[in-house]
Figure 1: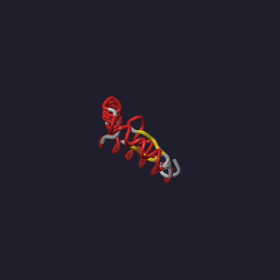
Figure 2: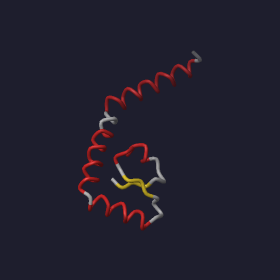
Figure 3: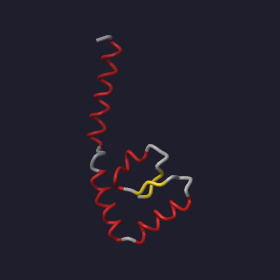
Figure 4: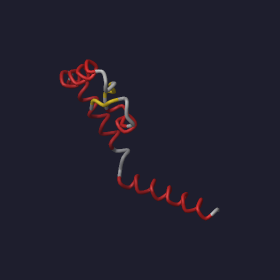
Length: 79
């Protein structure tokens, strides 16, 4: 993954991608070329991506949402 470091996606990508300033055309080109030309880098990013993706499950998302809703309802009732 080649990702812009000017967005919040860096938190999602983590170590599984190369971060580049979206206004830096040469940096973006260089990052894409690095990923396409280096089997070792590509494999490293794939492995990191699989680990990173495991952090984002439906179960985890549902649990976080449930906890947030519980906190919100507690705050609304003044408890």
